[in-house]
Length: 109
Image 1 (cartoon, rainbow, N blue to C red):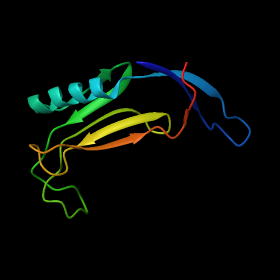
Image 2 (image 1 turned 90 degrees about the vertical axis):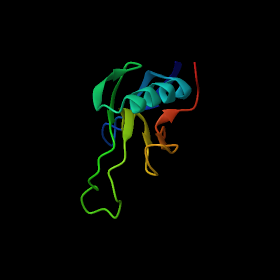
Image 3 (image 1 turned 120 degrees about the horizontal axis):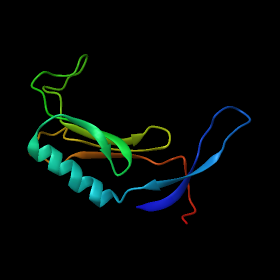
C-alpha cells in the first residue's frame, strides 16, 4: 500500500486534502484475475476499498453494439481513487484497464 493524499471538492469554497492508502496495482490485478478465473459474481471489500467483480454475460449491454457483456472488476471510489479491469475482447484475452487518480496529490509520504 502507498500512503498518499486526495483533494476533494466539497463545494466552491471547501476542498480538503485527506490522507488515503492506495493498494499496489499488481496485487489488485492478481486478485481480480483470481476472481475472473472463478467466474463468479462477487461484491465486497478488498485492500480496504469497496470492490466488485461481474462475470461475462451472453447478453449485450443495453444500447450497445457489443455482442456480449464483458466481465469486469472495479475497486475504489470514483473521484477519489478508482481502478477497473474489463475483459472487453473476451474472457480469455487481457483486460482493458482504467485508472482514475486525477484527484491524488502528487506528494507521497
